[in-house]
Image (cartoon, rainbow, N blue to C red; front, side, top):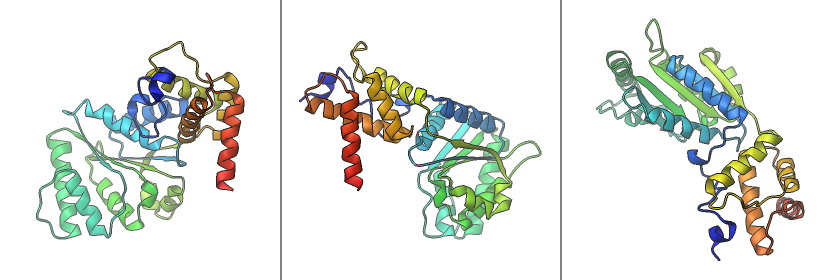
Amino acid sequence: MDYYKLLGLRNEPFSTSPDPAFFYYSREHRECMNRLEIAIRLRRGLSVILGDVGTGKTTVSRLLIQKFAKEKSNFIVRLILDPTFKSEFEFIKNLTTSFGIETSARSSFEHKNELEKYLLGKGIKEKKIVILIIDEGQKLTPTYVEVLRTLLNYETNEYKLLQLIIFAQPEFLQKMKRQPNFLDRVTMGYVINPLNEKDTIGLINFRLKMASSNSERILFTDKALKQIYIHTQGFPRRITVLCHNSLIAMLRSNKKIVDEKLVLSLVREEINWHA
C-alpha cells in the first residue's frame, strides 16, 4: 500500500519530529518567537520559555537556531538538548566543548575562566552575539543553575555577553523561585499555552497543504476537526498523533475522508488503552 499516493501526499504531514518546515505559526508561537528575537538582538541576557509537554517548545528552539544560522557572521548559536550530567565539572566541560573552546582546563574554575575569555573575545572583540539554548530546562539542578547565573554576570556596561534561552516545563518556575538571584535575571519570560480551536484547525490544514500533492483533496470533515480539537485540547503533539492515526484508520476502513465517527472511535481506543 502506497500510503502517500493513496492520500495525495508527497511526504508525512503529521510527523512528531520538530521539523521547522512544518511549523505552524499560531498566535502563541508567533508572539514567543518575536519576543525571543527582540531579547536576543538587544542582548538582554536570560529568556525562559515555559510550556507543558507537547506544546511546541522544542520546535520553537529549532526555529530559533535556523533563524540565526542564516546570520553566521553575527551570531554563534549552541544547543544543549538535555542538561543531564554527572557533576558540575561535566556540565561546565560540556559548555566549553559546545563552543569549540580548546582547553587543558582540569577544574570547574578553570573552565569558567575559559568561558569568560571566550565570551569576552567573541562578544566584544568580534562583536558577535553568543547564544546558548537549553532544552529540557526543568532537568537543570540548582548547581547547574548557579553556573549559568555566573555566566550571565559577564557583561559590558551596555549588554550581556551571553544570551541564554531556556525551554522548560512549568515546574522549572518553582526551581527558579528557590534561587531568586537567578530568577531576577530573567528579562523575558513566556508561557506557551495549547492552541485554541482556530489555530488547531489551522495547524492541521497547514501541514496537509505543505505535504500535499493534490491541494483539492479534503481529508477531514469539519466535525472531525472539531473532535480533534476537543480531544487533544490544542496540544500540538497530541494533534499530530491523532491526525496521523486518523489517516491510517481511514485507509484501513476504505473511507475517502476522516469523519467524526472515525475520530471518536480512535479516542475510545486510546481511553481503553490507558484504562
